Length: 453
Image (cartoon, rainbow, N blue to C red; front, top):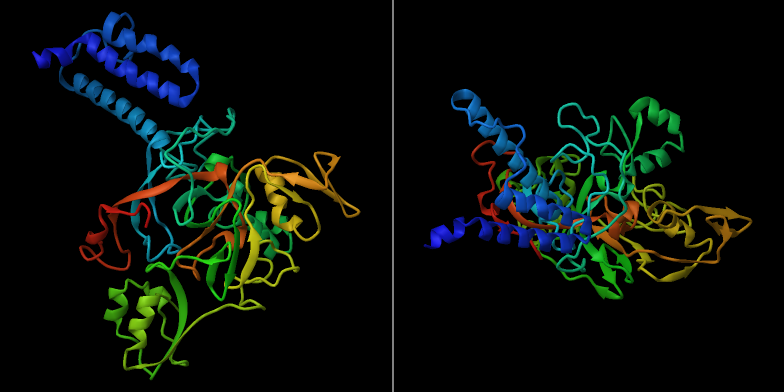
């Protein structure tokens, strides 16, 4: 009796129609209510052949199998697209900037529900592909249609300490032959020689906001916070950042002449490229370690000294004023001695002056869509004189847990709220590229929950 009830066409329509209606309410676009008649016809009237690619008479043999596979592929792609846009998306960690929290080779599911999924701004795109085609490297989208930014209701807001996936703020402009590089930094380091960059690494590609490359970092400060870094320690609103076991810094290690046993470094999953022994020292000039790993190594009999590398002004190459945000000579900031800096919040108003304009220029122009001109010490926004500016959205400050091997907000500035994608939820697979199968699989990390770590 129960089985017949679940097979009843009116029950099916009521179930799927209710789910669809709730989705439309969440989406906030009531034009999608026009889909209810489609659901009604699918389960009740059955007047329209929605699967138009199938023949009216079911075919057997090879033709029937091909059509069955076509059905399965279409439904799978549609379902995967809906999941990718509104619920979860799969990501891979490509760099060591978050080690030892997230390792290079971790495969993650990132929750978009945590902060609310964004309605696609560039809807005309190849399904399940972010910005470039896997083999050709060509753009996987067209900007013929561009929607305004809109975020659906999520479970919460970005908090201090959250691990966050976001669109790389400087990723609006990239060079075709080096799309991972920061175009604006390359431009500064080449003394503004744009033609040289284009000739060697071009052409230039301009990407919409939702097609920028994705980064993952930890949010160390939210809108309205004041942040500073003193001798490598982060302070937010005057309070020291909570100490995490996975937080890494780099150290100079001097030994009695021999390298550290490779088994010890291997057990700590230290990349061989980050642990190059220099016999002239003898030791290691720049090896990344957590505090507990540094303590463990310092107790080894062959260790003469172990010292954390702290960058003070003038900064070590290549961390010149051209690479440290906000790229001016007014501030003697380094990656380890930085700030104080205020993180803008929506609705907050600042006075514009010569000292802070370099901090907030890109926010006013690129992220909030205004024109900004400076003339005889005065500022003009959208052609009108302006002594103050009120921010239109919230901003965040992101840093990698591997503090000396992370290109983060210290190098390119604030992350706008409309760039936030989601938060890593679970590691579904992990492998170490420096080991061979089967030792390369990190079995202990598979299905590890990283939410809130």
